[in-house]
Length: 404
Image 1 (cartoon, rainbow, N blue to C red):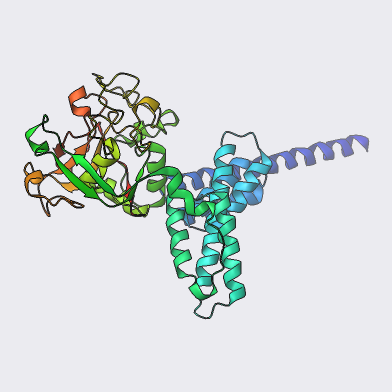
Image 2 (cartoon, rainbow, N blue to C red):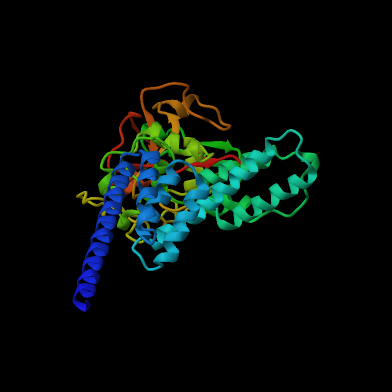
């Protein structure tokens, strides 16, 4: 009898392990299928596959993370937030833990934004609901807003009925632009150079209204956020560029339209040529952003000879000695920067003396500032170069501007 019981027990254990193994294999297949769908941006199919697999293997931290990604692609923010947080709870030391934490926070902000957008669209919104909207906006701002969320935040703020809006001091979220951008005050500055190239002449006094300009050139990391949030096509060599070691280096291979699209998406715009030059050299007629001293390796990334898979570029904002009078970095060297203006060699002879915006049409767009391969002459703040708008190249990036 004991022999029969032992044999029965062994048979039951064997069957139990076989069923468990089959269950694990089945969930693994669903996770693999879900990952394939995720790579193809088929988010609904990926979500279904991961949810099916998690019914059999509910403690798989990586599966919860990728299910969060699928929900993020569908803009199902509650689902995304839940699964990113579950992934963290299951394995707070996983290879994606830091990313899960970041994306959970961002999903929470979007969930809050959806909540307040729905509220402010109600034409009969009450004072109590307005107070709730502003409280939720406060929470979102404290969590941190990226460029796209800042645009939505501003739009929601504008839709709150002014008669019911509470009076309070300026919040941290209202200061996002001040933190990432420099304010250039209104006034005159010296534009052009009497000793420069013919297209920099005549040198003249130009009046420019106040504006904000990005303190840093557009980085790979920030541009990647834009690509993730939109259907915009990635620049050439994006797979090489978009590595962890390059996230703080400038994005390159961007055409003028790419730069313009990013700035518009972020609620900003490309600077005019006059704005760019004033931000670079200030009002005292200096040659370079730092003054009249010839550039050295303490001022700018320049005079390099060979491109080497993005390593030739410097992370944005490391040249303290090369800052402009307004605290703007890398306005000489690293990468050329697109501005808004069409190029004309004779524009300085005919253009207005107040807020010039360049010719109405043209064949080429203006780029400014020099790059990693430039000589000191090209790093002068008055130097002008032009390129076809469709030309990107390994030495061309951008930064954005904004009206106050």
